[in-house]
Amino acid sequence: MKKILFLALLLSFSCKSDKSEKYETPEAKEFSSVEIENIFEDDSLSIRAIEIIGNNLAFAANKGTFGLFNSQTGEMKTGALKDGDYIPEFRAVASTSNDVFVLSVGSPALLYKTGNSGQMELVYREDHEKAFYDSMIFWNDLEGIAMGDPTGNCLSVIITRDGGESWEKIHCSVLPEVAEGEAAFAASNSNIAVVGDKTWMLSGGKKSRVFYSPDKGENWEVFETPLIQGKETTGGYSIDFYDENKGIIIGGDYTNPDDNSANKAITIDGGKTWKLVGEGQEPGYKSSVRYVPNSEGKYVLATGFTGISYSTDGGEHWDQLSDESFFTLRFLNDSTAYAAGKGRISRLNFK
Image (spheres, rainbow, N blue to C red):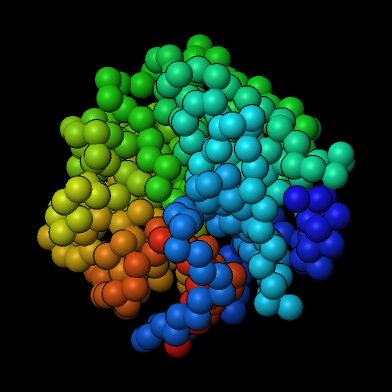
């Protein structure tokens, strides 16, 4: 896809707000229902990564497919990438004010950005047989981070400090050591949360913990969580922070989605300690969790293939808002979100 397409769309996007300022007054209203409007459909795609850019949307999916949605025109532009004969599967997407980035799972790990050559440009490649990246996000227009499964004795973490032109993998001497069977899930592009300079990464599998950096990836420590763990399919799948203290993690076991024990936890001290919430209550397994903007951290949405769940008390209690299946969700504002899943992207209007 030509960069002129991306530039035309990006120029129509309003600038992204700083993530430390994303939740501002006035306070959000409580939801009672949701209206779901499909904006893109393709039965061949599994879409697990979306990114809000202004009022618009970028997505990344399997079959090397990615795209940009212009909310003013209602037009979705898509493209596809190959590395020789290899067709990547994208599970992460991120953006700066000027560029869109897509990152693949599996080996080789391939990270592309909108480039000056008129084509999407490969800016990072990793050929390690265990390479498997799960999530990506930017702190600002120059600095971004992606994380994935271990290729050594630590999580794989790559960082850019030059707007995504180049990426460097952090040496394991800088990161906490992983436990046996500890990895992460590429389920919704939401294993990483950032507020200002602070960063949290969620692992899962046989061990599920939260890795924390106070300084945009320069230094790290790790905190235990009470989430279900012990199997390759258990643990945390998604993390979000409302501010630098208040956060939530969710997951479970996708092979046993009705199990609603030890799959939801909250923190009020910046991730140092976590408390289980909603024990023995729906929902069970979910792949994506997000605070509702402007809600003071009281309202929370969780999505998964079993539907959309909603909490009005910070995650302590939940109600089923819809049975519609989605893998991932991002809020546009405190009453509208985009969600993606098997074969579709939808706009969610909350009432």
